Image 1 (cartoon, rainbow, N blue to C red):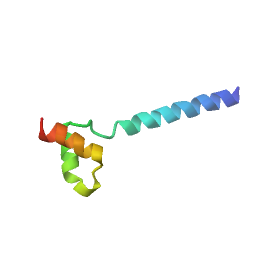
Image 2 (cartoon, rainbow, N blue to C red):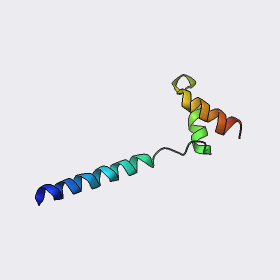
Image 3 (cartoon, rainbow, N blue to C red):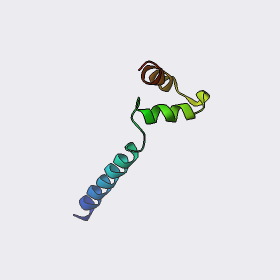
Length: 60
């Protein structure tokens, strides 16, 4: 009984942590995301970030 209760608690905490972390990043293509990308050094951009920036922030 204690083991299943501990498992359930651990699973709930893991889900809560994942939910809180996913809420921190702005949505790709939003004004906030475009501004964040402008402030980030271009050499640190991934290929996907560069493509998304061009698609959502340059060619709106």
